[in-house]
Every structure is written in structure tokens, then in C-alpha cells.
Length: 108
Image (tube, rainbow, N blue to C red; front, side, top):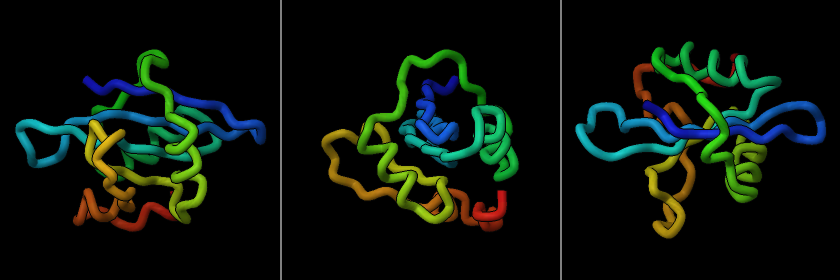
């Protein structure tokens, strides 16, 4: 099950943050951030990339201000990095680096 949350921005859009199991790995997780018009649209963007069992239940782990800034400055508005990520210093990656078989996420 994924843990996550969301933050509504002043312009009406939302940033959704989810901690998901890493694909192809028995242990480990990734933190995925999505910028979209609303929460359902954000989850649809992830489902269209093949992450079918993605749900947002509650707001237990909303995105931090640093995470919001990172996703707003990315052209696709869809990024990830290894979780827990607070002290690792790892940079954010475009979603294409996580799902190499997926198409560009820019058009969603």
C-alpha cells in the first residue's frame, strides 16, 4: 500500500506525493511527485504509465516545500527519487528513468 499526501497550491492545482514500492525490487521504495490540475488527474497520470494500483488514502505524508519546488520546476511535472530521501542527497529523476518502457509523461 502506498503512503502519501497532497498539497493544493494557490493557483488551484495540486502536488501529490506518494511513497511506492520500487519496481523490480523486493525491498525499497520510491517517492513519486506529480503536479496536476486535481488529485484524480494526478493519479490518472501515474496509472497511464503502468502504475495501476496507485491510490491516495488520506494526507499522512504530504509533499514538503522542497518537494513542491522540485516538481514545479520540472518540465514533465512528474519526478521520483529513492525513499527515504531526506538525508541521502539524491537528486530527483524524471519518471522515464524509473519506468524505461513508458512513453513520455509530458502529454498527460
